[in-house]
Length: 386
Image (cartoon, rainbow, N blue to C red; front, side):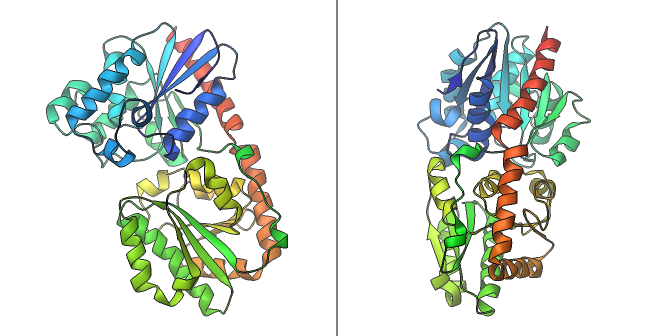
């Protein structure tokens, strides 16, 4: 397990997913690594996927209740109450059950880190009796509210989530998702020849994400209709990945030779993929509380790689992207198409936007900057704990 140094105060980060999934990688592993550099703080990460399970990522989410309980039993020695220790629970999934129960029984307190509005989902237990036992409620929305209300403090990854949590628990801090900028390079794109390389990355897990990809493909079709030389690379995986490939083959055969589909790429290899791109795409096909609440890791990885980003102006991206300076915020499909066309035609503007995007990440969304804010918040919580 990954962690950091220190002596006095211990923070145990508890995530459901593994290192390969961005929320746990950034908000557990990266936060813990950086926080462990502070004097007097010791950090530790427990990932249910990486440390307590032999299941795949998808199987970890879809596990049967018996498998979930076995994982929790394996994790119990790492969660056994320790002096001057705080649990850091990432998400309201079943990884929260044991630390929440221990806190209710008067043992270690916890911090609740929320980076997705997922109250319509149930990623706790299938059996109502188990939900009632661990959380005192069977409704996932109520479970989320209880996790927030009983936390020593909460950390929100977006302004929408901050507004959601503020009435529930006033001990609250906004800490965006971000990146380690040193992992990402900015190649000299001014020397490039050939097609403008647009990029979309992500997990295609359902209709909403598939529709996002189709938005990017429709943009490429509009660019091609203008006679511009461009291509789109789609990188990722997910339950609906094969369906997405079939859709490209059947519905976008007119631009099929301009579409490159790349399967799953390990997080530590993503900088290579990003370095060959010219523009990052972040389309949102729908406006919902889930979309408004997201603080998408891909956005910050695009920007850290010096890519201008075209994004639908929904939620957190409106606060991250300076429209016309580090990227383009759009309102609809036609706007999206026109932004792609403009950036195809304006290579110098692409370069200027990319440099500004990198600068914004370094000064506002790098892991050291974010964790410095988190460390100050944790200091106040440790004082409350006493």
